Amino acid sequence: MLKILPLTTLIASLFSTGLFAQSLQQEALALAQKYHLSTDKLSVLTVKVGNKKETLININADKKLTLASLSKIVTSYAVLKNFPPTYQFVTRIKTDGKIENHTLQGNLYLVGGGDPSFSSEGMNYLAQALKKKGIKKITGDIIVDDSYFDNIRYDESRGKIRADFIYDAPVGAMSYNWNTIRISVHPSNVGGVAKVDIYPPNDYVKVVGSVKTIKGNVNGVRAERRMTKNGQNILFLKGHLGRSYGTLVFEKNITHPDIWSGRNLQYILGKEGIAHAGKVQNSLAPKTATLLAEFSGKDILGLLTDLNKDSNNHVAEMLTKAIAVKNQKIGSIAEGVKIINNETKLLPMRMQDYSFVSPSGLSPDNQISSANILKIFEGIAVNKKTQDVFMKSLPEAGVDGTLKKRKIASTNVEWVKAKTGFITGAVSLGGYAKKKDGTLVAFSFIYNGPEKGSQVTHFYDQLIAEILDKDQPSPIAQR
Image (tube, rainbow, N blue to C red):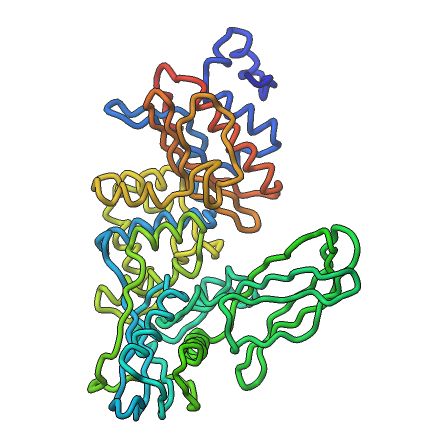
């Protein structure tokens, strides 16, 4: 059991009577002091789930604070309200021409259906489907139709400053590989030039510069993705990489999802032996265009797994636009967020402790209390099917996702499944912990303050361990 330090004269009095060591509430306060976290900047609520629900810890449970990526819990709730678990988004290829003598005389239309998971598997499938039809040449253009959503690539809730990192990838109804590339830099012999690989392989992104291999275990690589006036994406690489460092892997986003997707289709068609010398551009597919091939992406369980385990912002925004279309609205973040908020208003929450504008959680204006987060958990748990899908989508501590490297130091834990959240000034965690005796605890932790993220996560993990290691004999009063 951790060493307890008195917080106030009252707490010291409780300690002297032996009551302090029996109270999870007081242990939580002591842990906050240990990690130098002001309770004024915390919102914590833990509840023992069961026939007799008991509140174990309540620190400002009704305090509205910035959620960061814990916001994806709200997005998940709305997705499960609007789509059945088996639902899949479809990407199609159409044409306004005819196939004659192994040649497609006309344009090829790549029609986006809002699939957040569309990647190399889907693109290769579509290219091979055309090959099976005997097509060896396309005379027209490759035209990308991404009109299923609006054409706003970066929602205003992200802020005005753009970054080339994957968290700020653009969004479009026709997107490919989360609109990102993975770069691998492999050191060669000392003094030589490192080898650079890009996945998925494509000719849309051009690599400029080189990385020199040197002795030692050092990483001096600098990389920046830029865009030329004609839309070409350039990856500038320079610096050095130590021979013993091993392969350096990092990711960057691209700029135009529609042209990026079309250029990748063109590239893969070439690999399949289908020649195309036309342009790649954005326009609408004619209503009279005929279907040549289609690919169904991941189901809702797979998409929520990407959303929650990997905290994928791109998936959050794509699904929010899809919610808007599902409800006969323009496929925009603004319309999707309205519908999400209408869904949450039906829950028994204190709406004065709720503000939701960003489905990914990138905005500091997403502010919700811990008590309201647990109300959303309860809303998901009402339906057994949606609860199962939601639970499977959460990262598991010490196993996968954003919790893979966080093991809870308790011999009583069977598992901890929770969604993480982190932006500057805000660290959050919400989910469930199950003890080996079957006891299930729901928890929501939110901190807004200046302390380091690692310091806050250590507090969260130790607090969960304390909860699992100790039973609370009776519920405490709400404060």
